[in-house]
Image (cartoon, rainbow, N blue to C red; front, side):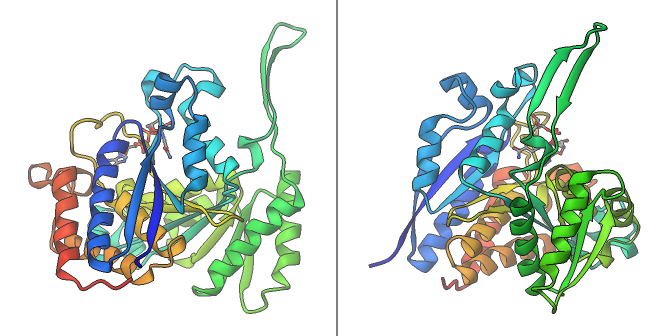
Length: 365
Ligand code: NAD
């Protein structure tokens, strides 16, 4: 009997439902071609869940996610909820699901496809050939440390965010990044701010200790400010970058822009359990939501990552990636990838082009 995988689908807010529609169509084509079935359980997260359920992460959503083989997420957030208190903000849903599923490693590849070199804001000679991956710690650090707001004795409003890491939290993400580096060019850069932060000094110490178990991988350290500069000056020096939560949030967006558009970037969040969560790097793009112009490729490439990392369908993953590259090679672009908006495809048209390419291929599992 053919296998059925349970996919928990969380479209979220803004352009989330639009791009997710195309991702599911792609999965359905993969199903037709491989005989593997996918069942979809839809849940709410983020702003839409705040409106409907009074919380950004309803219990029901968490239940669906925990019962699934993988979670596919669109994006959350929007101006409507920007003034909400912290626990009622859409992002709290994202942080909550990552924590609840124990997803401590966020893998964000930034690969420069040759036909998109011109879409980058940097010079072609700087970005051509960029192929790096940022491994970001996802469940610790300042985003999860204790937060306080109070008024000081002299009447000043004060805010505190605690940046805290335990040794074991650092060790597991460092190990993940060594494993990733091992499968690539065996070159790992650990990014911290060890000249200023105590948490970074612990980070560096743990990275050095773990390195002894990976003699085949070269480990070096960079300060986060220097890394931010090097990423735009000479990005090809990087292969795998590992860093803590907040630095990774910022650096992975910077790395994203090397490759032209945030609309192209997929991500995988993995943990100790078997469930992975797959989502585009970009947000809910409220400025273009509802207009049918969002680029669905980051979400479609997230589907490829899901096929590879959670479902063991490597061949299908490659077929999806090949279909996306073929569509780009043929010159098709969404508005975010081209100056000439008059020729740009909409979300559904772009999804359809990928499907047509996929249907030309013979896809195994
Ligand atoms: P954003 O990524 O939503 O948008 C930044 C810019 O990129 C916008 O001009 C947008 O139109 C464009 N863009 C993004 N995705 C695109 C796509 N697929 N196709 C074409 N253009 C695309 O970031 P933002 O504007 O800073 O944030 C908007 C909302 O999204 C906020 O509420 C923010 O909190 C939230 N957000 C959510 C996530 C997530 O769900 N993982 C990540 C980042 C931001």
